Length: 463
Length: 60
Image (cartoon, rainbow over all chains, first blue to last red; front, side):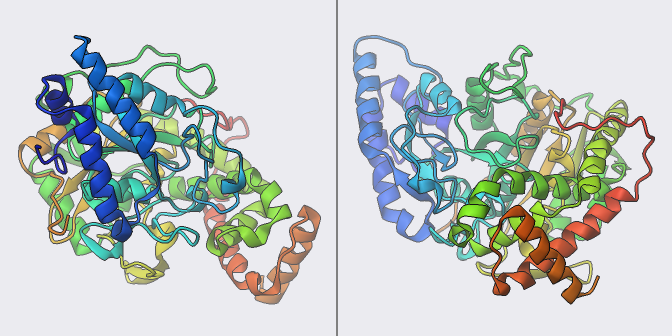
């Protein structure tokens, strides 16, 4: 059959729709690749083979009966293991949660993707309780980067990055509280979409910081981001943060080009602490776009600081019961961050929330003059597994919190971002940031870069 | 605050919270708290008017 390992989701859906391949053949090939490579990549923690094959057979039967499928018909996908999957405990990267009862229903986004014809094949490795940027996990072992298996995938959606970059699935879902879609997208060389806060429902996913948590897709093309994003949009009353705005389907609009868009390069904070490869990626992307100005995001360093404070305090509050009852069962690196977070002075937390509104207003003013901002996604390419520190701007800093240096000030106010991958010996990403609710702008710019060959998900030679 | 004083703070606060902190966790907790205090200090240093509203339920 056709080699589906590096096919896009849209190509697979077309092949299944026109009968070139069956959904069963797609899933069997997917399961075979997972079986072949997951021992190395450690991307999947659960594979739901029986469920996936059952669903594939149902899709094939419907096609034989003359029924038309959805836009993702027959497309295999997987989800970070903080998404509820019926029949599995939602482990969220932890040892503690896997003692929970199995989920009785799928998370809302799994339901929506399957309603569009996609087929869930499993759940993916992640950092414990999503409190990391590395993709390392004490309980399940680290996700490994398909471009170099001695390196990190980035996290916390590490398995999502590894599974898509390794050609195990064309599409995966992750979560992004402070950068956990964009960091693995950058380090694994993928396109990643963090939509506007509140755009996609989080119902049936294990939380981290409810006022910062986003869900979104990682894929190997902009078209696949748009296709899956459209399938997932829409209000859900079960998530109180989910917008009741009407969905804004992208359709083919991501191909609309970038004429007339005012695009700026982020300077100041986003110029410092870049390793040469990140600087080169920024230069390449900016050279391919009609950028006419460089702007300083107001108080970006303080925005990152405030996001850090809210995260550590709110995350600690979420886990307080578990910290009291069984602290020894956490990954020590997560536990000690959470215990420290539980002791965050209240004035810092309140001021961070007040500052958040100030910063949002300042950024809204900035977006009166520009339509999009280009910024680095990570300060460097993938660090080595187990690497604890790196040197940025001449200062030795811990890797775990600082891989998200450039993503945190953006998600702090929920702006939509597409991370685009710039090929190289090791890939690295760049953020395309748009005003709230304008995912379409970020996707159009990302597609323009993809069409120009500046951004591309390069296939790792070993996979 | 020196390490000894910070450790005493951590152990005292942990007792209030009901978290059984082991002695060999203190160094790591202390290091994480130092980051929080440094970044939280940056946030506190920013002048905001008394009328500034927090955004705990954030709307983009």
